[in-house]
Image 1 (spheres, rainbow, N blue to C red):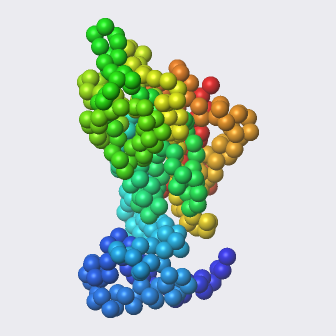
Image 2: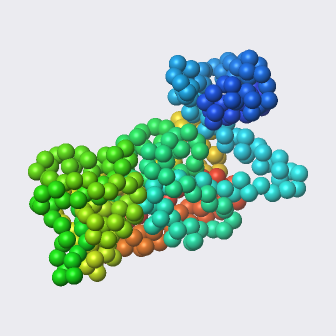
Image 3: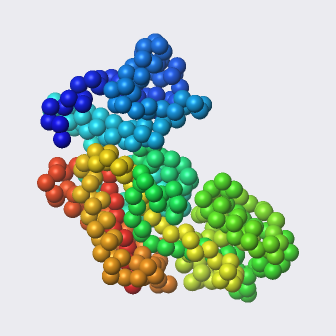
Length: 363
């Protein structure tokens, strides 16, 4: 480490705020107005920052402009650096800053409805939890652009590579289901012609999974009746007797148990690859993640590696038939709380801007 800070002498703080503003606006004219400078002066400041850093931070060949790969990493670093600096200055002046204790979460719709309420109510109260319930692709984008500390998401190949790290919580399956009749029989079957399909939005993560399944099974004859990106909404429409939908098992256990919903099919129409994972932004450079989050993530990763050594892949993070959605959420919240406790009990101050969870091993 260069204790003289020679590498920082040519970087002005206002350039860093210019950089964050331009990333948000994706337009030089709008960003210059917000920063109250002329556009030529603003452009020169961005160029000066890039020259001082030694890389191009933006891809100017596309419209609207986008962060370069190096710019994405730098954005994460700058955002955490300025947030920490502002909070420290507030504390020095004798004030308090809730953003220092703010944990920003982006979660898929169905997970935010079913999983997060149980988790949050058991979490330490010294933090402020800010939750965005959005579709999986948007959640990934928020994490990629540094707008959230971590996300609850379904399995996504984009999250299995740098600049992300992830810890698997549990796996699930998608079952084709429909409502039961008064006689306890399924209202619809997959064999009937033109059965009403209640599907996920075409561009959503779940929609892509189900559409691939439907493409592989040309023998299915259906007519799309209802479309939504929210599995909880699809579940309600299914229970109202409006058609067939593929729903995650953790969200329908009780309805299956009490007979309100019926699983329709053969194993080949059950989609197994919807593993739930928690992912955290993790740039290559060690300063990319807020320093206070590092012991928490390291703790979770250590437990993840120990679990993999002890258990087979089929055992680690597997959800057994007896586990309800609420039980999964309760165990997840215990894991999250234990890691926060680990971080705040360490030599670092009792603050953290990102958290993670240990893998859930359910026997």
